[in-house]
Amino acid sequence: MGTIKRKAICILIDSGSTHNFLDPSILSLIECEVEPIPLQHVTIANGNKISLTKKVRNFQWLMQGVRFTTDAFLMPLESYHMVLEIQWLSELGVVNWNFKNLKMEFKVNDKQIILYGTRTPFLKMVNEKQLDKAMQNSPAAFYICFHSSILAASNSASSTPDLFHALNSTQQGELQSLLDNYLEVFSEPKGLPPHRAFDHRIILKEGTDPINVKPYRYPALQKSAIEKLIAEMKDAGIIRDSASPFSSPIVLIKKKDGSWRLCVDYKELN
Image (cartoon, rainbow, N blue to C red):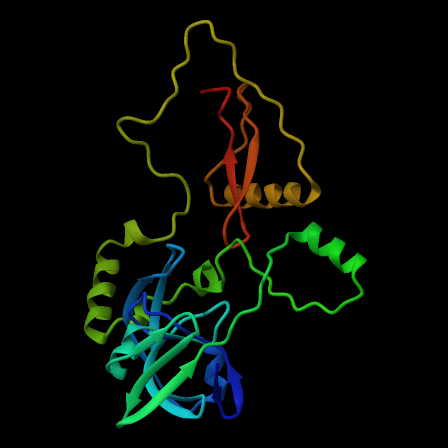
């Protein structure tokens, strides 16, 4: 644990990675220089890649009465306010660890410093049904941490960093020139591509009856989403009304950002 302006913050010390990370929620408590940096990618413990575009210089905090200063990348952290890694540990020099007692010893300006870790109480993960049952049967107070199976906002489409502004002025000019030269490639499609010399076709065996599968039953929420997506594609000229004897049902697949992807189930045709 540490403190900033008498406010407690939760800190993880991790010797398994390279850089320091700071949760953006801390910015309201500090007066530090936040600077944009060229886009960088890091791989976190669960294998997901995170984009970094900002860095905090000379971030200061107190930890068990000792003041520390370091640089840190800004990145949303689910369970901690700050993660200190090899970048910070290497500044301490020789560090003696005692993992049994959660203790680390080092020297700062020839002064012996001893930091003690906070012992985490036993935590048990429960699903929605188990939580509901516990709340009905136990008249006690609960401290709950919700963990989503979907990556937090740092990886959603709405929080994808603007790559253009992460570049320097020279790189921005080069990128804009590339986009202008290949405008037809990078522009948003407005209709179907032109006919090519070899358009895709599915050739059926001779004598095969038309494949006509009835639509699936959809809940009202999905039905509305399907109608909306179909209307948008018709307006864009991507699809059109058809009197074909062939028919395949639609399947909606939810994306990580919560929106729907419309897919056609060609299982019977294939």
